[in-house]
Length: 301
Ligand SMILES: Nc1nc2c(ncn2[C@@H]2O[C@H](COP(=O)(O)OP(=O)(O)O)[C@@H](O)[C@H]2O)c(=O)[nH]1
Ligand SMILES: [Mg+2]
Image 1 (cartoon, protein in one colour):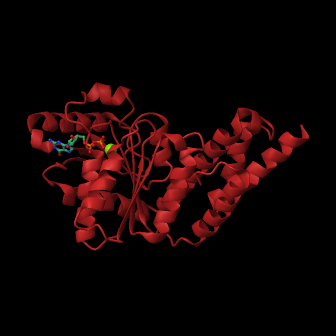
Image 2 (image 1 turned 135 degrees about the vertical axis):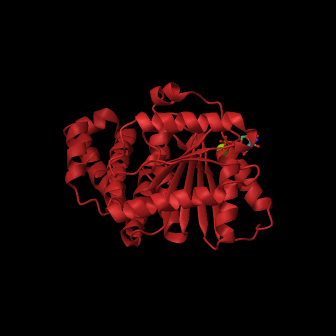
Image 3 (image 1 turned 180 degrees about the vertical axis):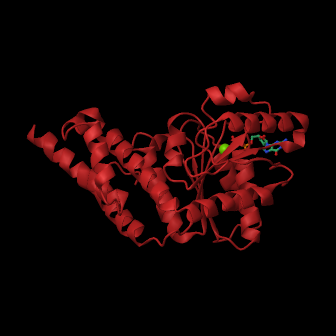
């Protein structure tokens, strides 16, 4: 998947296509995790993994780090490997770094998520909450968790930054800091109260947790599970995955072929419309098929 050579990529997409078509529905719970650097995402993931392993769940983790060389994700990997569960096959960790961005970090993220979804009960994708990486993660997650840093802002700032729009669950970490965490939770709650409700009728909860003291992890897992149940009961899980797959496919084609490539088969809007009309049994197959058309059109032009 990290390999940019076209024939390797085609072979990888063929395998991923076969795998994705055979995934049971709803299958593994896919949780995306975002938030500012230093909010404690990796520490919290470590706590979540411990909690879920103790409950008997298997967990796959992908840490996407588009920017830094030494990622918190790598730290988590170290912790997991160094811990008492060094030989635990019920947990898998992979960190994806900046160098993969050019080859399409979104491709690598989705590919890894699909593979892990075939093998584990739950998949987490951690990413830094800045720009593109956030949409990368929402294109693979059923449930998006936002981890907030206490003191990160007031209600208006959250609203202006667009932080309130995508996440399904908010966790204010470092609740051990006391009043400042309470205040941030209150600001987030107030902002959400003023925002338009989600299409599915879900109201995102705001929880307070302390990854350091392993406080509130159980309630957080309960909130993640409640969101997943809500999607299933409302019949929205399949349509959400579909929309996410469409968005991913469009982005994948755009990153690979550019607007010039998309223009060769009618432009971005035309491609988006085709994706909307496609059965989209496997997004990998569609990207391969449309990608081949673009290459053909570019050869002829
Ligand atoms: N006081 C306190 N510090 C925390 C907590 N969770 C994480 N930290 C610290 O916050 C810093 C950033 O944590 P990290 O997990 O790497 O954040 P990430 O960049 O969001 O992945 C580290 O120094 C952690 O030890 C917490 O619950 N309470
Ligand atoms: Mg981190």
